[in-house]
Image 1 (cartoon, rainbow, N blue to C red):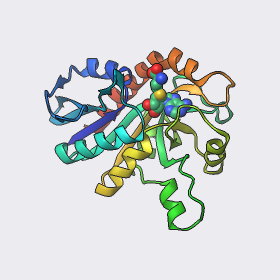
Image 2 (image 1 turned 60 degrees about the vertical axis):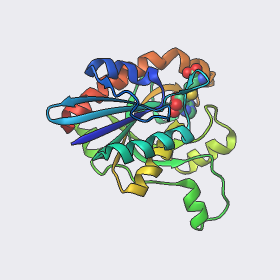
Image 3 (image 1 turned 90 degrees about the vertical axis):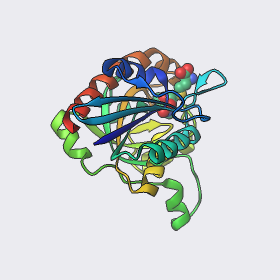
Image 4 (image 1 turned 45 degrees about the vertical axis):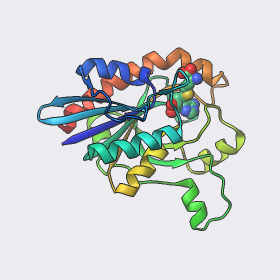
Amino acid sequence: MKICYIVAMRAEAQPFIEHYGVKLLEGFFAPLPCLCYHASIQGSDLYIVLNGEQHGSDLIGCEAASVAALSAIQKIQPDLVVNSGTCGAFLSNGANIGDVYLGSGVMFHDRRVAGDDEWGTQALGNYPVWEGTADLAQRLGFKVGKVTTGSSLDMQPCDEEIIRQNHGELKDMEAAAIAFVCSLFKLPILLVKSVTDLCDSGASTYEEFSKNLALASERLREANVRIIDALV
Ligand code: SAH
């Protein structure tokens, strides 16, 4: 089995990279900035793909995530894609900093194209997630929630309206872009998200994010090790 993780920020992946002692495959995606790490685990292949950097910072957001996902899928031909990363969540849904969720669904919250027709449907996305998600969450004791993706870290009222209308629980900047690429290849995607900030806490999202990034990334490592143990 080939499992391909796609992770936006190095900080989110580093504990996990160190845990498995994965090796960097030099030049794997050249000339793209994406990086590919690999390890063999009990006869399965674990790939960890990072979006890479531009202008001295990790590439976050939908464009970089789509490029990494497309290239990784074409080169690696994985059986399962996993997007592991941090997210915002909501106090009103009982979320806590550091909680790990598996995504029960995924859509965009900032693509406002009017109409209930096929264009409106395309804008929202609502891509399938791996059908084993709910069972895995139950077996391993993770929460589940719908992930919504947008291109900004802050949440504007128009974003919040779409999130609330669609019962979004986890807010990030990559999941729907990766799920979109997976949908084109009919590949299953598992979303593993750890909460760095609470969008309805009244605190500054950037400050909460920065303060909790290390904790949430460590929680991602713990969760991913248990997930991989369950899958291989
Ligand atoms: N300026 C930050 C950049 C991180 S942006 C820094 O200094 O490190 C946030 C990243 O974490 C994105 O990759 C996104 O997927 C995720 N994320 C965490 N909380 C989020 C939130 N509330 N809204 C959107 N994305 C969030």
